[in-house]
Amino acid sequence: MAEIQPFRGIRYNPEVVGDLSAVTSPPYDVLTPEECEALRQHSPYNVIRLILGPSGDDEGNPQPYLEAGRLWRTWQEQGVLIADERPCLYLIQQEFHWDGRAHKRRGLVCLVKLHDYADGVILPHERTFPKHKRDRYRLMEATRANLDSVFGLYDEERHSISDLLAEGCRSGPVAASRNGDERNTVWRVEDAALINELTDALAHEPIVIADGHHRYETALAYRVDQFMKTGVRSVALDYVMMTLSSVRDPGVLALPTHRVVSAPAGMPLPPIITEPCAALVSSLAFCYHVDECASASHLLEALREAAEQQQRAFGVYLGPRSCLLVRTRSSAPTDPAEDMDVLREDILDRLPDLLGYPSLDVSYTQSAAAAVAKVDAGAAVAALLVNPVPVADVFRTALRGKRMPEKSTYFYPKLRSGLVMRSLDL
Image (cartoon, rainbow, N blue to C red; front, side, top):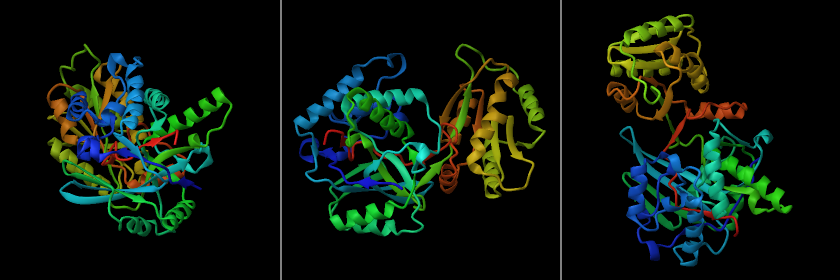
C-alpha cells in the first residue's frame, strides 16, 4: 500500500521573515485578486509570490512562473528559506472555528510514493480541470519543488496512528502561524523509531486524495516527461509531498459546494421567473417531489431535514417567490456521493432550455447565503443548493473506484501554504 518517507523540508527562516503569520497564505485558488494583492503587500516574502500563477487574459504569460523560480532560488541563497539538515517528518495541527464550535485537525507531512490511480494505492475522489493542471505543471517546472502539499486521507481502523501523531507533538513546536481564528502549529519528527512506526502503520493503508488532485496529477505527468527527456529515472520524482489525516478525525470537515448559475455575458435575466419555475417543476415530476418553500431560510431548513433522513434533495432558488425543494420519491437511503452527478444530469443540464439560454455559466461557493444573495441582486439566474457529502462517503466512494464531479467537495480549512515546502533537488 502507501509508501511514505521523511524528507528535508524547506521552511521560512524566522530570523529573516519574523512572524510566520505574515508570510503564509491560503491556497492561491481560494483567494480573490484583491486578497492576493493584500498578501503581496503584507510581506515581500509572502508565499503568494511563489504559488500564484497568471490569471485571466494573462494566462499564457510565462513570466509569473519564471519569477517564481527565480524567487525560490534567491530566497534559499539569501537564507529567507532554509532546509532542515536531516530528513524528518512533520506534524501540523490546525485549530479553527466552524459553525460556532472549536475544532482541531492533525496531519502528517511526508513524501508519498507516486502511483497511477489504477494501482489502487492513491485514489482520487473528484474529477479535475485540465487548465489547472497545466498551471501547476509550469510552476513545478520552473521551481522544481512541491510548494504546496497534497491533502490525503487514510483510515486507521486497524492501526492507532493518531496515538503516534500525539507522541510526535510532545516535543516543542518548530513553527506557528495565527491568521484570523486559525492557528497552525508545526512539529518536526526526527526520532527514527517513531518515523519507522508511522511508516509501517501507513504501509497498510490506501490514501484518498481530499484536496490537491491537480498537484498530484501534475507530479505524475512531470515524472513521466522528465524520464522521456533525460532517459534517467529520478528517485526524487517518484515522490510527492502530502499531508495525511485520518478520515475519522472529527476535525476533517467537508463543506457543501453550491452552484451559482449565471446568464452568459451580455444576455439579460429572464423577465418572468414563474414560467421557468413551472417548467422546471413539470420536468422533474417524473421522479421527484417538488415542494415550494416560503423563503430561502425555509428551503435550507428543509434541505437539512432531508439529509438527516438520508434522502437525496436539492434546493433550487430562482428568487424570493420561487424556492423549490427537489427530493427523491423513493424513501430508500441514497448515496450522497452521487448527488453532484444527479444534480448535473437532472437539473443543471436542463436549466439552459428551461430558462431560455443557449448555455449558462456556473460558479461555486460554500455559502448558501452568498448564493441566494447573487440571485436576489440580479447577478445570477439560479442558486442550486446542496447538502455536504459526509467525509466517510467521500472516502468509500474513492475506494470503489468512482470519481465525483469537479467541485463536489470543499475540505475545510484548507492547508496553509508556506509552512513546509520541498525541493526536488535535495
